[in-house]
Amino acid sequence: DVVAVIYATKPKDVAAIVKRMGEVLHGEPLSPKVAAKIEKFLLTAPPEAKQKQSNLESAEFKARVREALHAVMCLPEYQLN
Image (cartoon, rainbow, N blue to C red; front, side, top):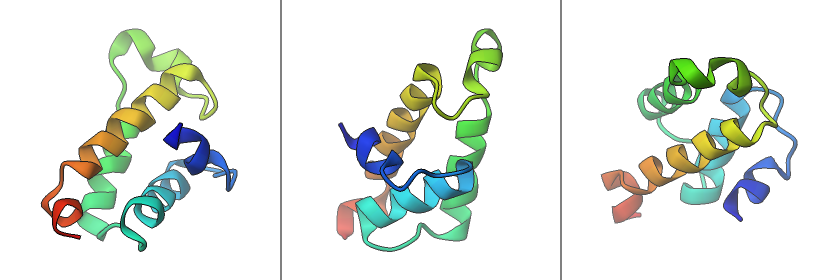
């Protein structure tokens, strides 16, 4: 499970999670523009999931992390790397 790899460094906030995504998928941090979009995605949950997602360790938030990882892998930068 790739989320286990992301969480292995025990990230303290969303920015740390996004930074780790870049390290795992690209070998370096994501560009500031991409990182900001991914952070916004992770912090913006559907209304019905708002309360559950506030915890970085919740299953709902980890599902969003998986979705964000998929989005990063669809970027041209990842495809060309």
